[in-house]
Length: 310
Image (cartoon, rainbow, N blue to C red):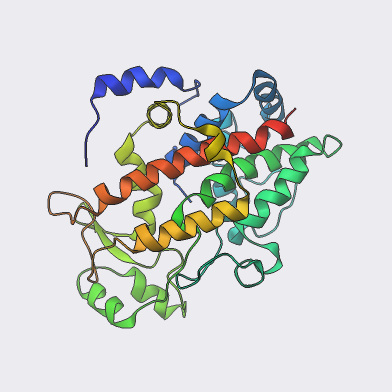
């Protein structure tokens, strides 16, 4: 992986909006939100800030800045008692992804999003709530946080694909210290849950393919969300072109990248090494895709939010 000069990163950080002291993991969601916030008009920023002001959820659940609000849907899912809002949203687990088979050629709502319980449909649902100025302000605040988060989730390729599990690979991985695929098979999962059941080595430690994409790739870009956001927006990207499309279009794009890049470039074997000196170069091969998806997510999030916050 090519390391960026620290001085250049420090200078680029001036692009990003200031934030307090994080699908993509915490940092990835903050990167997407920081890019989007920097692209919003002053009026839209003020409207978003007003909705998020005095958020009653505890600070560690994602109350505070626009960027930090991006983590609330994950906190809600992980700790619904501590991080609940005034609104009862029920079980939100399935809202963070869309289960398109790796062998499929495109998103089919009836097959991949039954009951509209998937990330693609929920972006549309919560965008409508956010855009309704007559809606309960607390529901609009929750809707804003859901949209911020779900647009990020949709652009993580492994949130838009799932592959069959392999008992033989699971047995070999278990002998090498990888327990995840074996555990998923014991729980009678039929598919790998977007790479969450695929065992890999990350810096010679046992991990999962999903964790590598959610956390390690983002940290490899920069350990700081503001700096990463600034770096990804250097060079004035073609924002109008990137912003084109619908959540369904972006779903298909993420699925194609999962097939071709996230899974397609994965080294063979039960516990492939993804980072470090003995790496198969997987990280350097897939990092440009991760960067492009984070950038696109931020730009597209801003394009969705701008008219809804006017």
